Length: 465
Figure 1 (cartoon, rainbow, N blue to C red):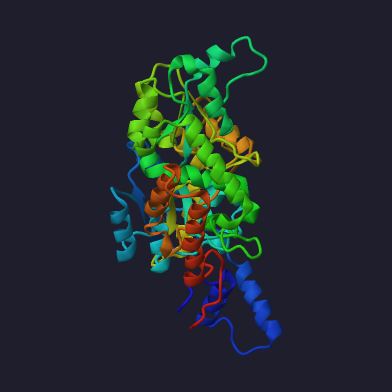
Figure 2: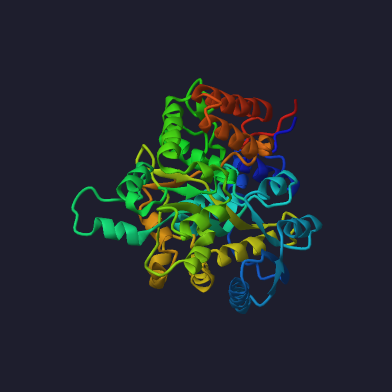
């Protein structure tokens, strides 16, 4: 079989050979020539006549207007480049434009990215981003989105980020904590939810609700990752695969058993049984109607919750931290990538980094409520601290507490995994499967995927088998 990924250096060498820049010469001359070409890579507009079509996924009319404003600014600086913002309504439409060559920059989701990469439709951006000065100010969430196909690769720069957060009854918390110096209620770590349910039992509410029908695996992932830590993963983009000797997956580590126990205790002590079969909409309805102290739901549901509750009755907090004192959770995101078919890849990448720089991305965050991707956002726009994005700015400031990982989306085994895992977790919680059986089944699934598909999170030379 052919590996689907190659080293960036090998790609550069192939390009140079194809262009005829490396001819018969000594090894020293060849190395010098390669280095010289690499050093010539710049993030710049070459001044040539160019037209760029940018296909954005519809998010809001405000974002579309802000993107058009940024494009106008760019064209004022580089009049030889014409930029057209085209809005599409679905991922299928975005992929269609990428496949047909109708767009130079296309916004894709984390779920669509692997297929686009496998089909060779996206430009690998690592060499460009290596010389992008603002890469160093990307937030931890944004860096994980960039490296979501593995640390050796970069195909998308994030446009929207969404993660689960904790929504809680701030009025109940404040009432209980009033005048106390100890024994307070919080929602900072997983154990807090059972504690809060006990101390606020006069409210007659569950400790924590969430959309267990589809999101049980997300809760388990985070508790597992937070117990294991990033250092034991092969790569945060291949988060189930273990870097520990003689352990193909995380599921055979002793920390995984502790995580399974913590997961089971949380459900038993703080989550109503019916929530395991709820959708996220049902969980939100339970929270907003006063049936729960706290809710675990996506940041994209903030407006729904705000519209259903009185001001001052609720608040939003960062994702709960696990046994290592950190929170590691997954992200949903969309990002702009450069089409491999673009006529002027250099100018397309230059506009992409312009669109994604600190000033422009922070402007987008303020204009349309998207999560900023630079650590400098709060300094550039202090008013963001007064919005629903303040929790994101908190997590940026506490980068020693909050980290990100992804399920191994680049593996074909990912197809059908979430349904399989959700069902197994339901059986485990119902007592139909032991902890040992649960972890063994997960280990077998991903050990087989690793053996059959290879180590796809890292760059490899192309080989034949």
